[in-house]
Amino acid sequence: MNRRSDIGWFELIVGIILIIFGVVIMRQPVGVLTWIVILCGVLAILSGIGDIVLYVKMEHFTGFGPIVSLVTGILSVMAGFMLAAHPEAGNWALAMILPIWIIAHCISRLSHLQYMKMHYGMTYYTISLILNILGLLVGILLIFRPMITIFSMGVLVGVFLIIEGVEFIFVGLDGRQYYR
Image: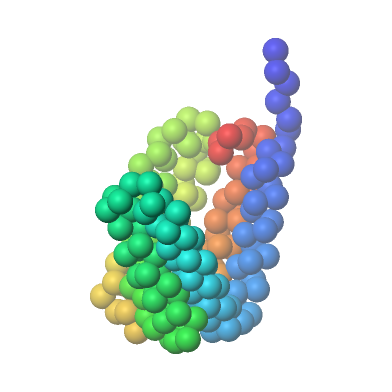
């Protein structure tokens, strides 16, 4: 019989990392978001180059088939250069995507609250229910007021990461490894 540890170390470590990232982002919200956008641009460029190289290698063997790889590669490189050269455009894109992500995440958490209630008890259930309903309301507000998202994105992401970190720590200290 496997013996369970009293602490879920994975969840505990992830929780601590999320809290640290949340605090760092809240201290430098604009700078961090700009660097995230630039990093996404560089990754898009590298991914696009990889797609183009795949096209060049595969085109000799399959003919027209890998043209999708060429088109997506070119689009990725173009998007990457745009994000790297104009990170403010990426901030606008994040301002549109962030609320959708928050809403989707909160709906996901709410959908398995019953399972969490059975395994972690009523306290965790209640805290998670309240936090995820508040998250839904914030996500909906951000969809209808995108300027709020742009000016408060760093703070919102920081607070969200801290809340997620606390939740992970709570789960980790409980000893039941939910994410494994």
